[in-house]
Length: 248
Image 1 (cartoon, rainbow, N blue to C red):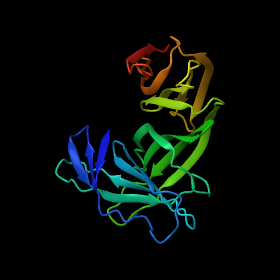
Image 2: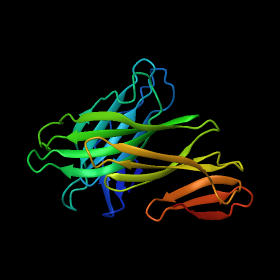
Image 3: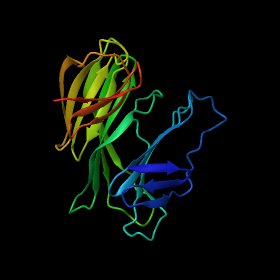
């Protein structure tokens, strides 16, 4: 995990602060925008991936960068190694999908390229689309910034007529297990389980049937999902009491 503050990011695994070089991706205040720029920083074993969407109406800027994590504990300044301006979110400005690291860094022993996989959730009021993005970074170079290759495909989508479907995801290297919790603020709360396998060339998904959330109660909000133990943490709407449910 990582925490971002200013131009610094904290690696909770190594307990080290890393400094980014000056980020030049600042909002263009001279253009009319739909909303403020959206950014994500995702920590992997070898790189920090920075994704940025500017949401400019005239030019919806979009960029993905990779910063090399130093091999030693003495060098704390990151170096931009790869960069691209993909169109994986479509031609019109859209909200940046929620992203999860699905498969951590795999380094090819021959080419020394690095491969990563991410699972994105593109949300709308009554539908959620799950997309798998495969990123390949050529072998690091000390001279210049290299391009990266990106491919994205839809794994599955979940439609829900009773409002937003809230996904809680627990992922490991290549596998993910998650839930959609639907109609969370009503007595009709229910869940739909799903799994994703990202160990092959393309990601495969399996979506289960809709099941009632038991015991029947009105929940205020979702907390988190422990995919390893199969436990869902919820908060009761009535008194704020925390509830732990075992999900088979």
